[in-house]
Length: 351
Image 1 (cartoon, helix red, strand yellow):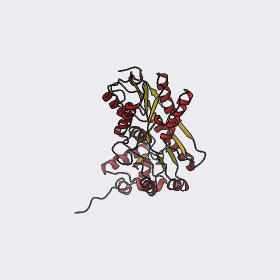
Image 2 (spheres, rainbow, N blue to C red):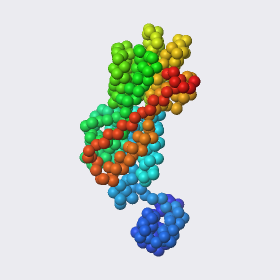
Image 3 (cartoon, rainbow, N blue to C red):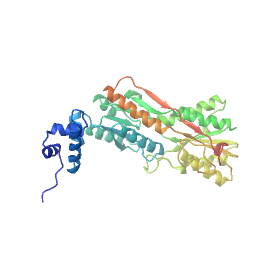
């Protein structure tokens, strides 16, 4: 029994008695081929079960029509929204998105970079682990543009599109001060990336502008779980343990500002076990705008991140680089402001 063979442009051409070039131009909707001929070619291609060979097409056009996306953890709700938004925007412009996850591992990131180079992607959108840049410099040397997402690597001289996390940390802490809190504990992940450092900087600026000290015990580093598991980037249990120690020893009134909404969940449990009321006894402000925030009781005040805006802007910047055929050039940095959403956990509206 003969193995089934993939239908080619030549098969369609021979069936219709036209040239392969005519078939190719007809399937690409070129005006140089009459409308009736285009209809005949497309009908015959469908009848024969023709599927375009994207690899062969990329050799002809000099483009794979594919963008690589390297991300640290796709289960992070913010990054999940980015992936969805970027994939949709790529599709609108005729590009496919090839996704690779690194789980905050430099070794995984290097492997992902090697694979994307091998596949000949047109450009790469990347959330880096921020350890080393040599593997990304190879793309620049090859004329393949990079757009960094949410984390900067200054030595790469690449476009950066992300969140203004300094503003986010500032707004969260300033809101707690405006609600009457004077001793504000900041629960932040112990991870050496720019987004974390920027949120800490925002918190420090807010405290300074409010005339409040940042005491050593108010900066609480929550051990990261990203390097140990891929199912969820954050674990409320460590924030719960550390917040419980604070509640047992601290003077009230006070507030907790969390670097992500999952850490805020740990504070909720501490308050419940200690018989404390949120927000009457403890104010809580989260970060990230995760889907559960409006539904916990009391509803969680949080800083929402503009994932959709970042997704569109990042892809647009990549397409701009491709249209100009310039992988380098003067880099552009676009940081979108996050939005503080006030709810019941900080004395705002809701239940």
